[in-house]
Length: 135
View (spheres, one colour):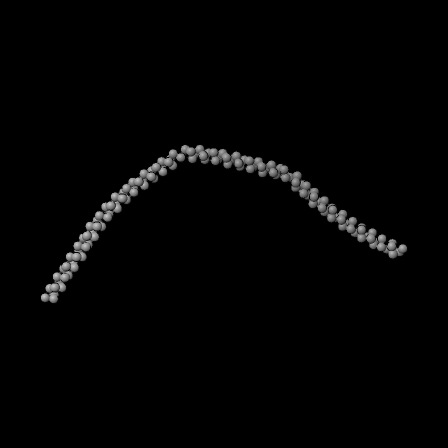
């Protein structure tokens, strides 16, 4: 009987320690949950602020894009004019290039013929000099 009483006493003490440990743990858990609750209560105001800023940003972006489209619409004819000017200058420069190449080839042929003539005349003169030196 005494052993039963001692066993019950040990069990009671162990159970008391378990209850104290669980109560402290639950108290700490309660403070964590309260802190989370305060944070969650602040979220709607913060989300509203972020949403308002994002809405304002999108509105300003749309306004800027519309303004940019209008300005580009007024500049579009100038881009077409610049493109046409580029095409016409390309045509003119290619025509000048053809003319320059045609005139550049003709003197080269003349110079080449002159060069051939000078070489052949030099060769003939050299041959005559060799004949005279042999005689």
